[in-house]
Length: 231
Image (cartoon, rainbow, N blue to C red):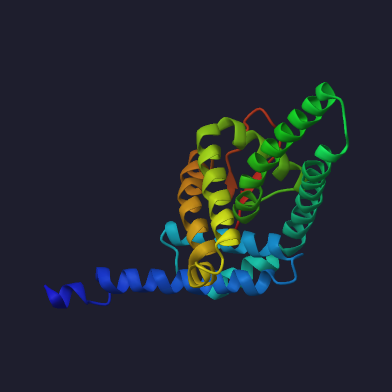
């Protein structure tokens, strides 16, 4: 029994290998995100690897991370900068709106619009980088499909938002207490959990066509074509 438990393919080493994978991925994400502008490419690469791991394709963690980082760098960076700019505007509205001395009805109207926009922003954000990691497409189509998926799978979207934002909150406000968890597991761990949901969702839409790399469209009524990332 002990020999089976401690066998290289047994549960002990399986868990140990998975923990080491998460640590490596977390450190890679942190290091590659330091310039800030590269966070989009780092997140895409992280999700590319975690989705592969959950599909049973978990070899060469660092190699796959940098492969995706390089291949998706331009589009992921553009997507990230767009979302960063929009996020900055939303944050500015939140910070300055209370100090504008607007009439109550105008304040309520602008505040409600800002909240709705922030919610829509969060919904789209949950799908941009996993779509970029999994599919080849134009940036405008990635944004469109992120919006479609966020509404079509609304319960999953809500779960994703809660998972990501609670992790961000705990990591930011309790960084000192959770230092080692944040450094070693926080980002890669939540990416792994979210990737379970992403893989289930993509499996609904991505059906291999015999003798072809082409995949079924997410929105059948659209004329866009999809090609799954080469493994």
